[in-house]
Length: 109
Image (cartoon, rainbow, N blue to C red; front, side, top):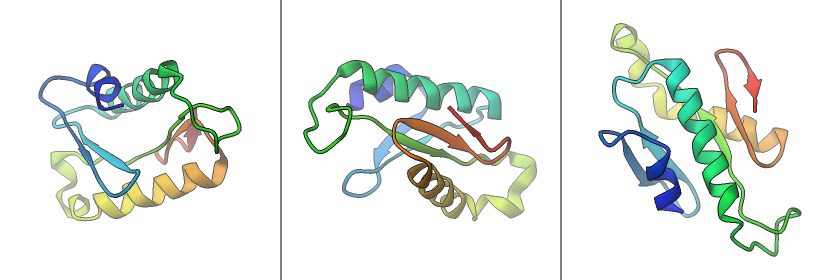
């Protein structure tokens, strides 16, 4: 799965495990629209693996991605990024399987 994540992001970006079955991807200096597109590529890449997952209704591993974004101009909010990402992830989980959720537009893809 990590290969699918790395293939969807830039070389300078940092993917890391963030718990048992959760990952975080730090996209340094990435504009919001590009971050959304990277999240979509990650979701599609993992789905394309078609890795078996008996406990999942589609029968394969899929992702729910919650996206949070801050810029250098938003330094007051930078400390809140982990909380914002966690909140977006839980919203994605609430909305269903195999999707990207981001708060700026409340879009689900």
